[in-house]
Image 1: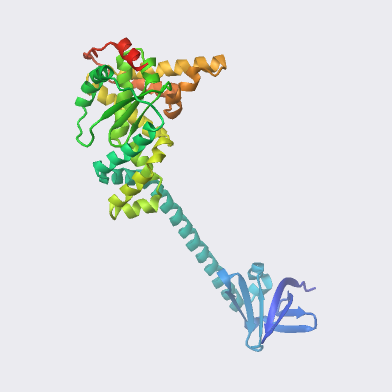
Image 2: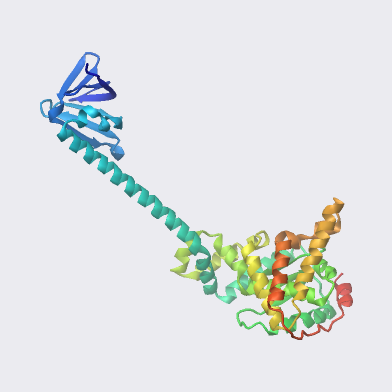
Length: 374
């Protein structure tokens, strides 16, 4: 008993197209569409793949040149009746090899694209860092000043000579030991109860009166200043803005003229007031800020103590489940990831670098400074 194999198909005869069905037995291929029929002997059948991505299987026969039978059912290539004929088996094997080769090429292209995208992602930060170094210092200063003008339009600032003199007793020893010539640091005190501080490109650092009033020692203020100074020298604000323009724009700027990019950054300086630094940038600022404190012989324990103080106040505020001035003012924590893990990291850093050394005494009256800026 002979079993027949069936496949959905269509056929073309000159300008006519017919939808129908292929039937196979051991020696013959039949196509039937209503009253239209064509019969191809298998021993001289020609079979090829074609169409978009070789999705179609085309069947022709030299004895019926006007007819072409086709199907999208690739199971036909594995049909036992077809492959029992050596010439057809060679043709189906060739089609299968072509499909495998096409799949491998597609897989290679996908892997190459994925690798390229991953490479661009991995290389993005080094590229951003290299571009930031090519931005002229004067442009960074313009960028910071443009952002600072927007802040001044919204906040008042402490304008008190005595408060400025006291602040210099912290900033002078700190800044004098930072070996760089790119920036001239300027510290401003904003009348803001939020426990916050932030740095702008070009060397501008802003301390809020709320932060000064929360400090228990001058070393705590120095720790915050060292951290923010590191944000400046590491160009975190500039790098963050550069990152926002996109990888292809970065490549264009890197291999072209970086001053054009600098002009775009200045025009978008407002973004500096809404963007938060990544955890990686904060870690960098902790490490470099810590080194600045040690070079200046200022006890870096102050950085840890201030973060502990902020964390304690935040926990107290949460425990009370009340919206208090403290709860509202802890912006420093929201923009700087001061977590238990971060404090533990700094404590381990202190132990790791622990050695017998003398730290300078910051000779200033903290209470007077807090009263003048309160």
